[in-house]
Length: 136
Image (cartoon, rainbow, N blue to C red; front, side):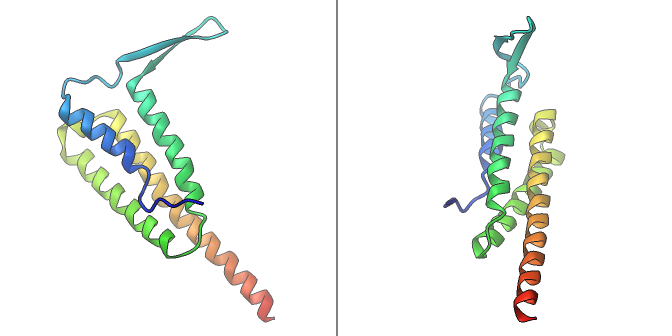
């Protein structure tokens, strides 16, 4: 079902870096659009909202990918961990990455890593229980 063999959260990470380094004057909280809500309130959509929304949607796909069993899943977890480490280092060491937007992208990446370990552990426990029932 999922053929991609790389962490999907690499996409918002790359988008952030491309924009931050190629257009250094970008303001992530700049207004992109205004949506008039039925309540009468105006919802102001920013670049930050769009990028973080994309990252959250990709996180949902990553969570679904983490339920697979096999060598590809292990490689996915290792790549997700490497991406998180790179993002954390960039957040701490690179001035243009020292923003709330990048911090939230890093937290989303951390959730992907933790989820991968939790799902992996739960899946392996379930397999052990099934094997024990078959043997007994």
